[in-house]
Length: 167
Image (cartoon, rainbow, N blue to C red; front, side, top):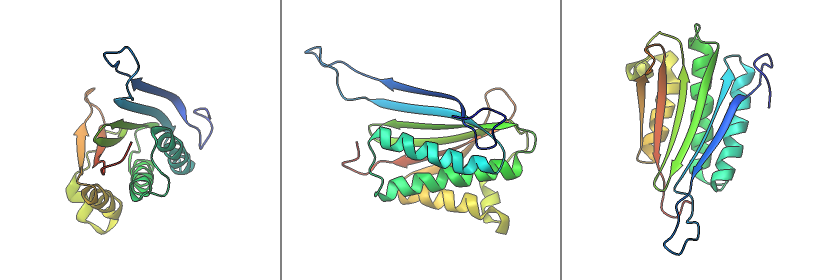
């Protein structure tokens, strides 16, 4: 794990697992898993975010050979690259992965006040957002841009519906 001064560093990482109990008192399989971390918005962070995402997906139990695994890696790479390229007023981005029984949600948040819209995906320079939206739709999901609850910045949220048999 790096530091804020490390160009490819990953900082502020945490993991949360919600575990239920069966009536017998035995733990049930995890109902939700969440990993979150921050990356500085420099070019090396795209690779660092992709590598961290890969480790998280393996911990979530996804097979690295699955098309969903590859789609999520590409989505995180595209969203972090977009933040590196366009979020000039944000020193870092927060990447979150949240997996429940039926859905995997990817979020990339930055503090840059410049809005982005899904209409940007139709421009030549917006091919990354178009790719992200297409990948989400392939898995029955979607891409949304949500304003930050703090009033500054935004979060790109990508939802994937998990195929049957996914842990």
